[in-house]
Image 1 (cartoon, helix red, strand yellow):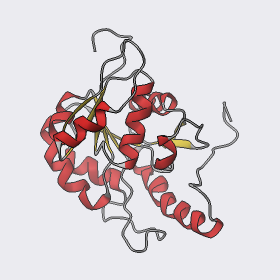
Image 2 (tube, helix red, strand yellow):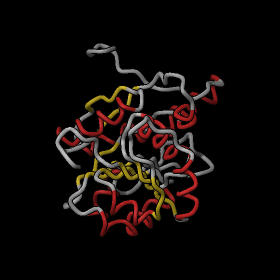
Image 3 (spheres, one colour):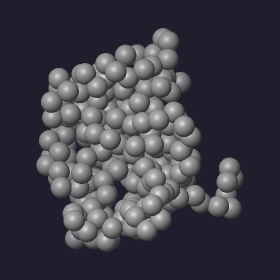
Image 4 (cartoon, helix red, strand yellow):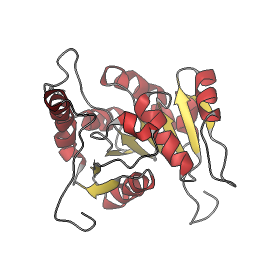
Length: 224
């Protein structure tokens, strides 16, 4: 960052997927410098070219996942559970000392409405174990319907933010607020199991009530 008030550069790993592209769209629209990462640099560059940004803001960029991770000051990982491990290994050497936001939910098809947690208890704890103690992992954005981020309409959903350091949670809460959501301090990274499991519950609720992406709201706190 050029000065203390500049917005950090955000790298979105898996940035051409539904959640990644939705977050990229909203963060770029809020004036954040954005780098989209993908297995295909060409695909990422094309997706970046289509993002609208405010006048005077940096043009979004596209790169491979590893290149994007090296550029980003904050790295958001938006990949499926089945590929999380391989992609984290790919970017591990590029994220030392950085804040990594893991959005992974351990969904296991075909029974994605059933909670199925990994041996590490949560995908976020698995990410921390894989990346090592030199990386500050925060977990967030599990329970927001990704397709709603593709639209300009408000999204009625809070974002539970988990991390062992309050200052790291604050940084991610700022990103949640920037994309039109409300970030909520939800405690240490170990608590991320709650939001990951809740995603499967919400999938079941969507099916039962034919809802278009049910979300969550925390009541009784400031801004409710």
